[in-house]
Image (cartoon, rainbow, N blue to C red; front, top):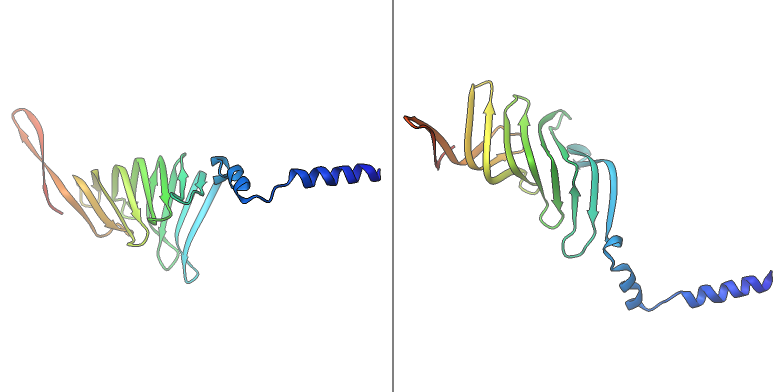
Length: 189
C-alpha cells in the first residue's frame, strides 16, 4: 500500500508543470475563456437603488482580453426603474450583446423599446449606451404613440432611458400620390 502512494506521488509530480508558457498554451483554448449561464438576472444599482434589471434565458460570457462581452443568444429583457422602484420603460430583443469595454448593449432582431404610456419603438437594432443613459440607433425605426394617435417612421433615433424625450434623426414623411405611397426622408423630430 505504501509503495502505491509513493508511485502515485511520483506520477503526480511528473505530470505537473510549472512552465508558464505550457500552462498558458493549455488555457488559451477558447473553451476556457467563456462561461455559460441559464435563467440569469442582472441588477444595476446606484446607492442601493436598483436602476436596471436584465433577464435572459441564456448568457454566454466571453472572457477574452481583446473583446470581453456577454452574449444573450435567446433574447434579452431590460427593465429601467425609477427611484421608487417602479418600472418606467422596457427594452427587449431576440438577441443581444453587451460589450464590456464600450459599456453598451446592442439589441438585435425584433428590438422594441416601450414605456408606461404604451409608446413603442420598433427596429432591427437598438443600442443602449450605459454611460450616457440613452437608447439609440442609425437603423430604420417605427414609433407608435396610441394616446396621440400617431405613428412615426424614420432612420436614426435617440432617446433617454425613460423614453419620454426622443428624436428621430431623419424623419420619414409619407406622401400619397396617384401611384400610391412614397416616403421621403428628411431631418426632423
